[in-house]
Structures are given as C-alpha cells and as structure tokens.
Image: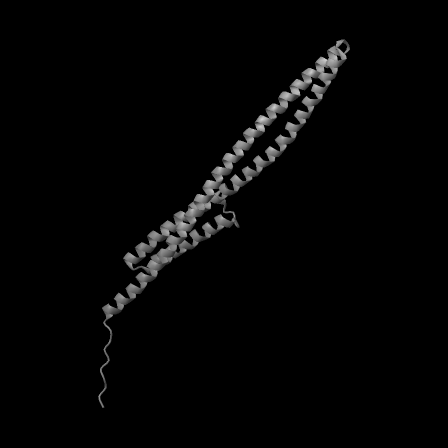
Amino acid sequence: MAVSEIELPNHQELEELKDKRFTKQVALTTAIYAVLLAITSLWGNHAMKEMLLASQRSSDQWAFYQAKVIREHLYRSQRMILEVSLIERSEHLNPKIKEKLETLYKRLGDEEARYNTEKKEIEAEAKKMEEERDHYRAQDPYFEYAEVLLQIAIVMATVAILSASTPVYYFSMILAFFGGFLSLNGLFMVFSVPFLH
C-alpha cells in the first residue's frame, strides 16, 4: 500500500493569498468609508445651505419688523401732534372740522395699534428663523470634522493596503468610527461636543 504524497502549499503562495484577502478587505472597507464621506458631505452641505437660507429669511423678517416699527412711530407722532392741536384749538374749531379731526385721531390710533400687533408677529417669525439658523450652525462643525476624519481614514486605509499593515488598517477603522459618530451626531444633535462650538 503506497501512501500518496501530499503537496504542501508554497509559503510565498500562502502569503500572496493572505495579502490578496487583506487587500480586498481593506478595499471594501475603504469603499464604505467613501460612502460615509459622501453622505456626510451631503448632510453638511444641506446644513450650510439651510443655515444661510434661515439667516437670510431672519434678516428679511427683521427688516420688515423695522419697517413696521417706523410706521408705528410715524402714526404715533402724527397722533400726538393732532392731540396737542385738538387740545389747543378745541374751543375755536368748527364742530364738523373737530369731528373730522377726532375721527382722524382715532384712525391714527387704530393704525398705530395694527402696526404694533403686526410687528409682534413678525418678531416671532424672525426669532423662529434665528433658532433655525442657530440649529443648522450648530450642526455644521460636526459634519466638517466628520469629513476630515473620514478623509484621513481613507488615506490610512490606502496606506494599509500599500504597506500591508494591519495596525494602520485598524487605525483607519478608529478614525472612520469617530467620523461616523460625529456625522450621526451632527444629524441628530444627541450630544454636544464642547470643542466643536
């Protein structure tokens, strides 16, 4: 009975297979990093765009508010001048003219009150826009730092492939983890990281 010979694989071939498996694994991981980077970049661009739009709308509302305040003060000053005039000349005025001036006095008061009410509504809307702007402004740094960490993770993964270095690959994973964490936190604002504000 003859024992068949068993051919042992060549050591170099085993190393090449191991390197190919490692390279494929790191390449796949790098692709995942790239997808995370693209999503983070999209969220960051959205936050920046919304922050700028909210800032512009807030500015517009405050300008509108200011116009209402000016009109309110204009009606108030006209009303005060008319009031003084009525007090001074009340006895000497024709009753029809006096009645028209009193009607005008009341209308000026109504307009003043209307502008006062309208400016409060506009002020509330402007403050709401400022809160929205501040929310997006708070999100933005998380996305920026997440993008940086994910870009560095991609570079480190590439270095890991070129050097066949497992520690560098793990380092890229740590960077990507923190990048993903910052990205998700930027989206949901669960935690406040002090150095990012």
